[in-house]
Image (cartoon, rainbow, N blue to C red):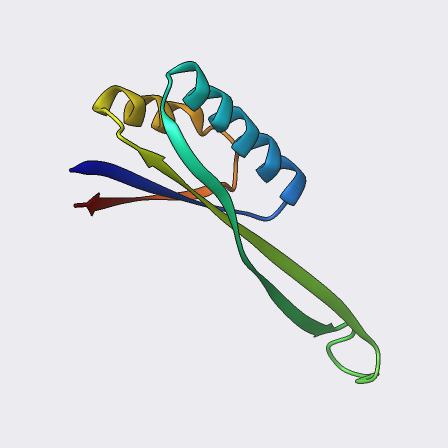
Length: 105
């Protein structure tokens, strides 16, 4: 029976997200832990418009867009020490990560 941990990464800047994933892949290679990924998930785009003036000129608006990039990596046969290293590794502001534990028979 293998222990599989799936780690989801959600971040607004894809360049920093790629750097974070590269750092974690190097950490897994140093500890000789096998991994699969990163797997790219669909990006979510939120678009919204705001009126520039609160009283007049309804046609004058500012448009904004927030893009959320998502990835995940599967780590195979991990121990508790590696999980603690992963938790200590995340120090970027705005990075959202989730651990999902899977069992493979």
